[in-house]
Length: 425
Image 1 (cartoon, helix red, strand yellow):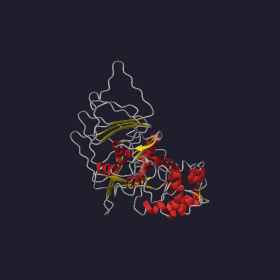
Image 2: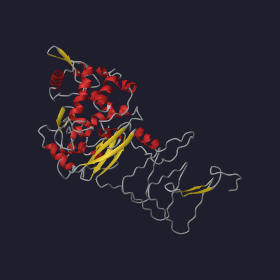
Image 3: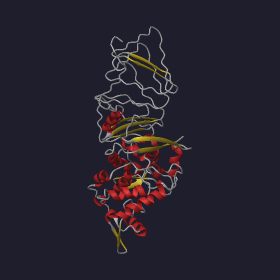
Image 4: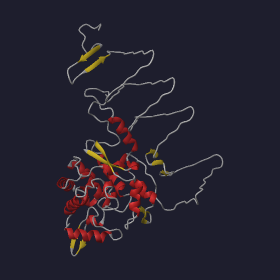
């Protein structure tokens, strides 16, 4: 170093550490570092590699470039991104290709289905246009629902959060730093502390077949009420690959573990939700007592009771006694109020508090802990034993609850979440 009395913090430095178990070669360039290789160069890393650039970066390749990743890959950009090719540009996927943005999505499947969803559309051509179907007639407004889903209005903020999570601020510094050893770059969901995949020895086709054979036919909600779901609609909701983005991923949250939500924050979520308002402590106590995620209990109640406005949530008279049912337990399609109230009467749910706690115990015993159906997905589809012990017939049941859950978890960036995602053959 040209610097008198220079240290590793104020000069160019090279350090060798040979202590067993702590071997390290450390190099520091106090300002610039230039490397010139006149022929080939090879760089091999046996374990993990972290690469951080504080400002801009440029890559230039005169000939061809090959980039390969054996497992998964995520690319996140904080503002704009442009991909351009002078000639052909091919995007390819072996099972499913999705283009998503907020409330819109276009999906191509390997089976040949092209699914689109959005709040509106506009197609304009200067000349003639054609729609041809060689398999039969073209149906318009046939009453069926969308065959795919869009990530929703919070998609932009989800992406922004994922980008920010890659650049944790250094203490006492205004610039970000690289992900340190032992840290994970959180992906699309805040608080995503762990994720695992559970393999099942059958395919999505097997799952769909089991559902179609049920006497209690899977249904979907339309403007005309519940109608039988088509095979393609069942397949769409059964296949986990379709729901790994945005709020949808919350159907795979482990419901048998607490997420550490405070009473203040729970009350804020329940505020304005009719019969549920002011019941934060009841939900938290029930969740702790029966080993259930407290956010799930509140979100489930909000869904089943129409945000605390339903008859069952506000009390129904049975044999001179007012009873409550906060989770729709025992409420059968077509006669939900009467059957739900009768079940609540048998259980002695004579107050909102008893209904919240009693329902939590029922869900814990029957599903989350008793039968190891500890995710919304498992409760709806039961992948361990398809077609048996399913909580609902609505194909959208698990997905419908995720928006409420995401809304809560968005308020708790430090919530302790874990995911269990099914993996079929």
